[in-house]
Length: 383
Ligand SMILES: C[S@@+](CC[C@H](N)C(=O)[O-])C[C@H]1O[C@@H](n2cnc3c(N)ncnc32)[C@H](O)[C@@H]1O
Image (cartoon, rainbow, N blue to C red; front, side):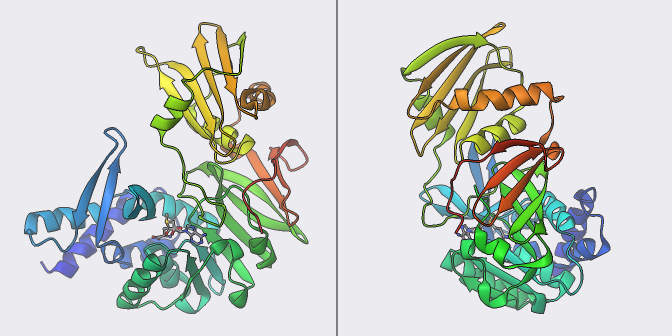
């Protein structure tokens, strides 16, 4: 069997592995055709249990290690391709999530697509395969990524418009776009994306901890539902600050608080919903659950690095002791949203939606756009 045959079998295996997410023949064909290992020749896979990275090189001179690297490139894992001071800053996203997003994007032949976050170029190659390279534009802020992606895309036979720049500004020269897909996360949807969206276009983006699909509902307004949870690498714009590690959140929230009060224990939220709500209330905040020996949550830790505000909620039976510090009383801000969540049948992320106006107003709603639950405070830099 030749090397090409080997990777064809690996691609078929990956496509089969993510088949629950891959419904449309055009995306099945794209995943079967585009060689992922070309886009991530060297990469690391993170093991969350040990918080360690396993590094792979698909050109390793040792045949066994090379074969292991090729096999790893076709697993349903995020392949981390760039680090900055030990922090991952670029990667090829987990294929099942890519597939779910491409399906949700509902891009049709003839649609003009803008991708924010070219990264390795693999997602752009899939879109080129499905829709034709002349319809695809992609942008990344990192010049090293852009150079590598340009070479690999060409080697794989694709020449989309590939630009090095801040994707928060979109790509005015190629606008309007029928679809904008961001493969990095934002706190607020940049106004440029709304301005560059075609009349019946859609934006698919990770806001806070959820993926939301936004359609035009009027001039300068986009609106839509969240459909799944996700935490992409953040869009790095002028105001970008690095995230704290969980360990740092634990250290900071272990200090002496400005205010302490006792309250009935909050409703038990699973982590994804809790992280979704806390990130919407205070953008770029970070939530950590601390488990007891019995495996139940003993303490919620939540920090907002931008204001150095933090909360520690220690649970003891039906009561909780809330320790708050810093200029923002984070738990006091969150409490009404926990009440709403409890009194509306414990909604999952997919019952929430977002309306964004070009003046930067972001309104979170539940079930229908008229049912506002929260107007997000100004944050990020939307313009
Ligand atoms: C998860 S990776 C993208 C994966 C990529 N779509 C692929 O298929 O390999 C996120 C990318 O967003 C890029 N990024 C971060 N901030 C950006 C910005 N302001 N404008 C454009 N790209 C940005 C990062 O450099 C990184 O390459």
